Length: 385
Image: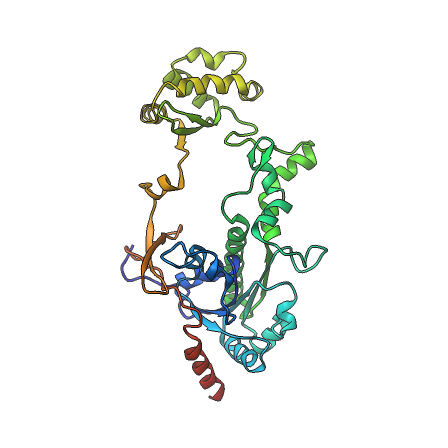
């Protein structure tokens, strides 16, 4: 890695009429890569600015998804502001928006209108349930999409389906938006023409539910929530240690099963016990098997068990609290300057490139409307020219 970073998106102008998580997180990716990103906000601001004040007075979601951008306050129902946005989009490479379906077209910024003025423009529309169909006008917050897609039905504990504890549908939709825009940028480099990218939170969740869906449609039975266990693998799950920690193990094949019995538990005969001699029998007799593993774990400390599991090449992991995760030796962080000038540290970007700097730093989090006057002046001059 180098301290003279290559910025692959440098020269791109990304405009995002955005709020909440999915669209802001997508546009933030382009800011990290060197693009100029103009965030369009109402005069009251993206409501994610007020989700919480956990990060030295700033909202955690907003800091995570909005660093490195410029903030421009506009009222697109105002003719002068609408004209200004058109002038900006005439120069833009990408336009991202996550308003309600149809709202952007009614405001005069539909994809066909925009590409008549700027044929190279890539538009990205992020919705909850898509732009047509009975659900298209439904409010689609992350939790509700988790429910509608069946995600919660395969999570949680038996009899207690549970919401996934982070906004996975928003995050997944953002990742799909990034993939879609990158694909469109490559297509433009070939054809010279912009194109439309469309995706929804529901379609994102539906894609993840492919395996449970196939089990239901073709095998007649959906996977049930099993907590830390696995519906078709055993032993697999979390077991409490003598010092009241929880270690999770995952036995994926017969070699690992034999090593667990002989080298960890010290009972090699368990590997050939008729109740546990193959994967199907272990699942069928899961309660008895789990009782044996749990009994062994309860007699040993986490440190002892980690040593045994590592030596036997058994896959394991600690069931950490967020507090413990915050001190994890593998956790990488990157500094960011908040809108009030304070410094915080976010989780570092998960993808690293050889052209990234050794000591990366995220761009500053913008204050509401911080760049409004500058951008108005800039694009007024462009219009006059």
